[in-house]
Image 1 (spheres, rainbow, N blue to C red):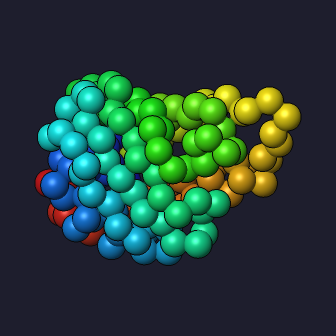
Image 2 (cartoon, rainbow, N blue to C red; image 1 turned 120 degrees about the vertical axis):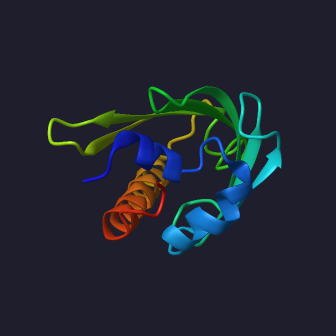
Length: 151
């Protein structure tokens, strides 16, 4: 079981300097590297993720729009890569880590996107959603196996 604040913190939402030392090690099948581009993890900060061939795109840059560390919640907007301009016009991601009745966590991810007129990208969206699931499962598996890793 992983507490919400531990799960949220392990995703390095508000600690961009630790991206390259964490997510790429936790899910090397998906993320080759991750690093801050601008900011210190607060609203307006930009971070970049570089991917393996598993996701349908090689990289993405996202801008952090909202962070509530106490509620383990954040929102971001894709600003470059990740299919912006080709597969989607706009993409936003809303992540919430909620407690369960047995002291664990449930991660809720809401992905909103607007497709360009006449574009159909069901396969790309499905691959992207699957990649996000693999990332969270990898983080969860690491935290379960290493209970003191983020205390």
